[in-house]
Amino acid sequence: MPAKGYIEVNELYCKACELCVTDCPHNVLALDMDRLTPKGYHPAYMVNPEACTGCGICAVVCPDAAITVYRYERNKAEA
Ligand code: SF4
Ligand code: SF4
Image (cartoon, rainbow, N blue to C red; front, top):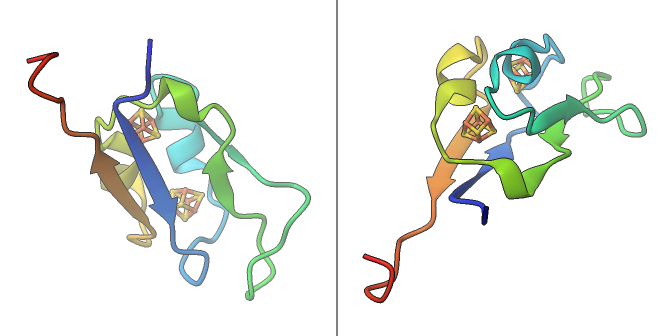
C-alpha cells in the first residue's frame, strides 16, 4: 500500500521519549541510534515511511510538539 502521509520531526524539540514510536499503529517510527540532536538525543525518524497513513497519532502524543504530519492529496483519478 502506498504511503498516504509523511511526518517531519523537529530535532530541536525531540527528546527521544519514544511515545511516537510505541503509539504509531503502523510501526513507522524508530529512534535513530546513529544520530544525535543538538541537545544530545537520538531523534525519532521514519524507519518504515511507506507504511505511514498520515493518521496524526504521533503528533498528538508527542509531548514536545516536535512532529508535523502531512497527508498526500489523492489525485482525481483515484478519487
Ligand atoms: S502519522 Fe500515523 S502512521 Fe504516520 S508516523 Fe504518525 S502515527 Fe505513524
Ligand atoms: S514523541 Fe516527540 S519527543 Fe518523543 S521521541 Fe517522538 S518526536 Fe521525539
